[in-house]
Image (cartoon, rainbow over all chains, first blue to last red; front, top):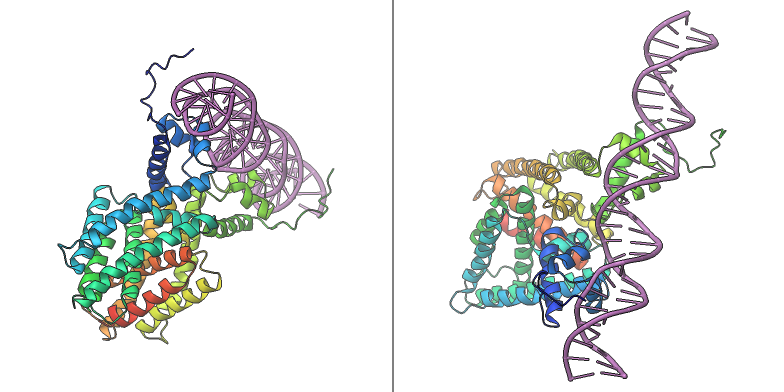
Length: 206
Length: 206
DNA sequence: TGTTTAGAATAGACCGGTCGGTCATGTCTG
DNA sequence: CAGACATGACCGACCGGTCTATTCTAAACA
């Protein structure tokens, strides 16, 4: 008869909190293991949620991942706004804060878990057009946020104006994501430190 | 009795050419689908080689991939030498040629298949220590080749000397691999073009 | 030169396990 | 009673890897 005695794992309880929990745990797992290496069952077991519930909330692993990407973007964008529009710092300082924060975080975990978007991009861009589009959208969205910040810095004369802000933003993100990737593989924060040095002391200064 | 009538698919014939063929095809497949998404059977079917042969030449998928990485490095390094030590061009021109070549190639295939090392790095660095080490080794090896080229350019006064050559090389590769990744996902060569512009006209010029 | 034979290489059925996904059933709530 | 949600057995496909049997080849020996 099973009387709902709580000898079982806590259970997230409530109704659509299950959905959110599924998103959070899946996000974490894909963060460090990628799409293919993250199994649905694995996520389910971690949360003690049955298979059927998963397919009640999502109709496929692929679409589930689209939602994970959006979920991630939502929180990451919020962080970006907080950092890149922080009125207590100048635009250049904000960019620097962004890098320093990441450097600290990444360094603390031996450079694992670089960036969910980067990881999924490399793995899935050529495998799933749906995911590729979603990832592309997020990338461009983030770039625009950096563009605004850089533009503000150019207007105040703090950042070199030899290139349009969008160009500098694109380069900034190329360099940073490449540095994170290389740091992850070499297990060394040096690529990130190098990037910061040259980016801030040469490129943005102009 | 089976009298070896050739109604079957051509067969690669010869002896350890099979091994090489296995490496080549596996390399191609992992190039565009990554490690996990490339199945052994798939490689075998493409070459019409039986399972037994595969495990005669390699003892696991993981070690097979290590050999693929080395195989790839071997040919890629040769290309790098050809380009980065080309006596008919100045060091700066050589770096430019490297980028232009890649830009053309990548652009011709809608930016798919960025770089085998980059793809495997993002996917496998955290999953397999063996592969991570191999990838890391290759990355550092390539960086050293760029370092030499940049150093030569600094000596001839062609490249800015505000930073040691190894630093510029690291930044160069961070930026380039990030650009390739972003190009792949956004299906647009713009990140690469932006990188080339700023790298050559701002950073290296100094 | 012809015969034997060890081992390389071919061959593919088969293994346990896992994958993403389905479905019939049960329960809880409005 | 209707619909949202829970539950987990079950499905076929496929995964990496093993196993035994066979064929090919080249050196050893007569």
